[in-house]
Image (cartoon, rainbow, N blue to C red; front, side):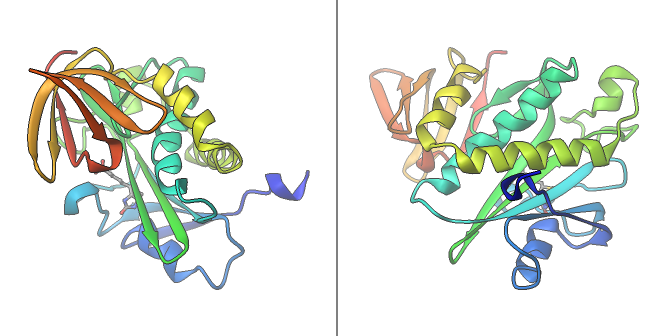
Amino acid sequence: MEEKDEIRIIHVKETDSTNEEVFRLKDKVKIPFFVRADVQVKGRGRYGRVWVSQEGGLWMTGLFEKKGEYDGIKFMFGSALVVYKILLHMGINARIKFPNDVYYKDKKLCGILVEERENLIAVGIGLNVNQKEPPIPSSTTLHLITGKTYDLEFLAYNIGKGLMEIERKSIGEVVREYRENLSTIGKTVKIFTPSGAIEGTFEDLDMDLNVILRGDVIYVIPAFEVLHLEEYER
Ligand code: BTN
């Protein structure tokens, strides 16, 4: 196996948040590496929300060096793509909801929290897998969809491998493939930005990382200004 394909995954039983754990380990483990936890007692979601992280789910974070200006957004889109493609390969027809949620029909299966500190990027992935109850009412789990039980180690390895491949790709390659698989295109949405909320049809994500929204006029919204997006049609 070539050095570039080596995947270091540290498995812990319990931690506060794997996104915190990777930063604590940054000087002890060769970057890139991953931490997976059976349970997170302070799992974090986007916008400061709590991420319910009981046993049965896949809670993991990869720590990468920031090498290019757009690496944060590359991992943001790329990680959703990785999870989506792995699920598709397993026969689960999930969908990517902008910017980086993975849904099954109208229920959330996976959330992603990308955080940058200094020159490092933490890519935190929370995938609901073997839980027998939805962690929150608007969510679901792979077990609830298929009735099967999944090997978390195998899933973690494949996600890790996928993220290492994203690291090697250009932002252009990632955005092109992400956009081709983005289920939000064509949907009626409400987009929340620092300067207010806008409603319209999500027409596209262009190669300059702008969301093209058709409302009363055509809006061009930089993707990184989208704080939150609600979909009205499924
Ligand atoms: C969201 O949709 O709000 C993002 C959820 C991200 C959850 C994952 S679980 C692994 C990593 N550790 C955390 O505390 N959060 C992320």
